[in-house]
Length: 332
Length: 294
Image 1 (cartoon, helix red, strand yellow):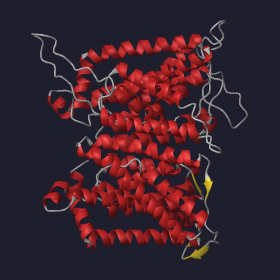
Image 2 (cartoon, chains in turn red, cyan):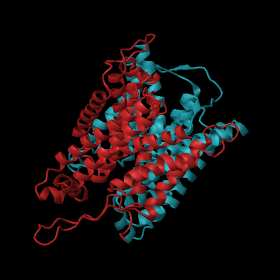
Image 3 (cartoon, rainbow over the protein chains, first blue to last red):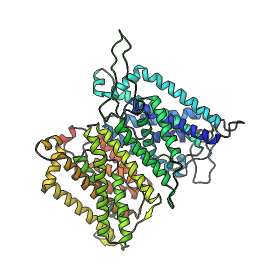
Image 4 (cartoon, rainbow over the protein chains, first blue to last red):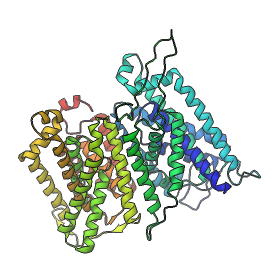
């Protein structure tokens, strides 16, 4: 029972960190990015090859590096590589594409990455993927073996990311980002460099997703490219729509709802004879319907983004950002 | 050289299937103006429908009819129950795109729930390949190419010479202007979805037969190749989509002669991304159209 609860909590916390990466990209900057889970996966792979010992697999199976670095160093490496890759993708794709074609371009990029990593064995052992990825604190007595201490590590990571993003939210950078999200032309007229702001948000979101992906790889201890289809990114969007686009706490709660509550609630759907995929299929249909229902009934989510306020008399007026990119219906 | 010619021959077959799927998507994107992420699922639904018909009667025409019918119905219902009510609220276009992603998730997993995840083998009666001109093609290949030509011709006739096609072109230019000149725009959009679904369903049938199997994710895997053809030909230009399909179909199969097979799909994606970045109005666009970037 304890192990079960720890695994539920770890899943929720790790996915919440990845979802916060999406919160930066979509919630704050309004970038309809569909490659996020691929960036998280790269974070996972990079963490794995930095933390694993050198490859001793029967050929042709192999992987690069294998440096056996300490946990925190491997984590930092994963964050840096995810950020660099995001910078490369964002620098090109953010240049002049309309929202929907930006989405299509990023999903194509994610598929190219998946194709390459799956086919090119010397990088991360192709479709077979990596196994035996080190999980920190797993060898300590007591709560080590069942992942209790590792859950603590993940919770600390989530709290750190949460406070950084909370600070960012009220910083001039955060305000500038929201202004770009609402109306990039108007924002540029006020002297903002919309492209640079969007690119920064894209890279920051990638770093957060890379951190989440690295923790996911450490938690699962095995990782291959079947685990990250575009569907995973859609699920994170579902989480953010439910929680409320632009609201950090909403993103975290939405993730727990989609990745843990719905997952567990549909676990007990019996498999139909001869179709072991039935519970999975039912879960994804439910999530699809959930996206539609939220966009119809509460386009701003269950926990809408708080309105920015004037800081009282004397302060220069800060534009109230009320509309949210998902704003399908007239506001309430 | 033979290898290259074989690749071109196979490329023509691939391009035929792709042309049907791409023309359907492009037509819908010009009239209803929604980049449809669930287009692949409409194809998959058509493929499963044809498979079910084949269990009862192995007549290729009946199978194609089943695919067309189910594809059309799925597309029509998706528009009527999901997209049209939302579109009435005049949301951002991105919201409609997100809804099609949700629709793709729902449709794909309904099919996963019904048919399971294992791939269903689906073969028509085997026919030996024959030398036709410089190419080596089976009778089934010829039927596919013929069907594609028939659909392209039909789309051309409808768009150019019927009242419905004229109304479609009017709605594509401006829904408002079409409405004030007495065209029932909503009806035209609905019928365009039906037409889109019919062609996409048949394309799904042709794809399943050419691959030899069906899976619930078959259409999604193919979707970006279709988008590549549509974007290459110029978004919302059905004739451009035909040419785009030819380029992409040939590029994929000819590149397989020179690079490992697993990577060939990436060729289509890279072509698509380059087009979006450097020629967003399509590779066949006039200089004037190029000025109005998307």
